[in-house]
Image (cartoon, rainbow over all chains, first blue to last red):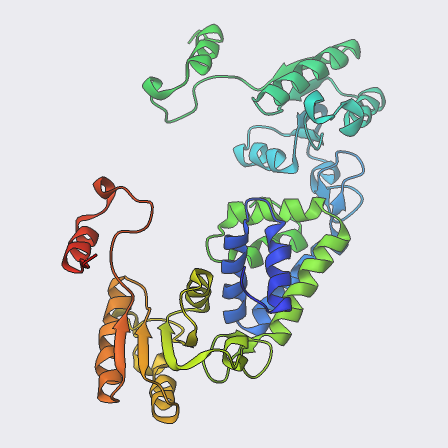
Length: 199
Length: 199
């Protein structure tokens, strides 16, 4: 950036730290913010600070929460015998949007990735095992991503959970809704054939 | 968004106001900010507020400036007989990066667009005409974008500037560096042929 204004350059530098925001996008956002009203920029800055001050993680499931426990953990209507394990809070939200699950959650905050030096103790896996011992859990639904890391994490957790005597399930693998078989990758089709169901 | 946390939802709402940021991207950024340190988020919020407090527009050319006049206008080494007219501060920076121009600038802050109700008085056009009368300007280089609005603005300004007796020039239209003729649109090739130069 050729901009010699320190305060402008600082905003560009800070915005560039965000994921998916390069210096060009950061400059475009900064120019946009220069053009908006003072109130809009103050609202954004205050919202950021307030969120950072108020939002933490649920003591039990590690989803984001403004109180000690998140809304799901505080909801007595939830089926506390089922636990769905996800990588990130966003994944929890994706499952909630499906309205197909009424149990509790456990957010790992990542997946196992030995190449990046991420082992079980870097995730909320010890806390998961503790919950399996303390809570009356009958089923653990593994809903980590269908990537190499997510699959490896599911496999690892399946072994640990079975040792605790709970039923371990995994999200179904198959053809997504609304899709054309022609364009689906062979691995997914293979999984869909192998996992075929009788109608 | 299913997130019921008001402070999180507020950050998503504020970030969604940025150009090119939809609610999904906003949520991804907000989750990222939740995971970073307090100091990083404070640095971003403070940078935004400081920029908004300090940065305004140059009284003379309307480029962004922390003082009354921008750095270009304050630079005595600049050729004050030439004036380059651009739509936005970003465009000024693009020309500065080329190191091909040493004159002064005038930032219009937009282009004429009758369909959007943007006429000459919504841009810094009256201020441009005033500068042409008050300053000793010999050449006006029209560097508005090569879009319908930018071209229309250049045409409109060319007429006004010629009335003031200054030489009016326009950025050359042609084939960009490093490009393959095969893939250039016909309009650009046409302009390049019509504007061919003797070597």
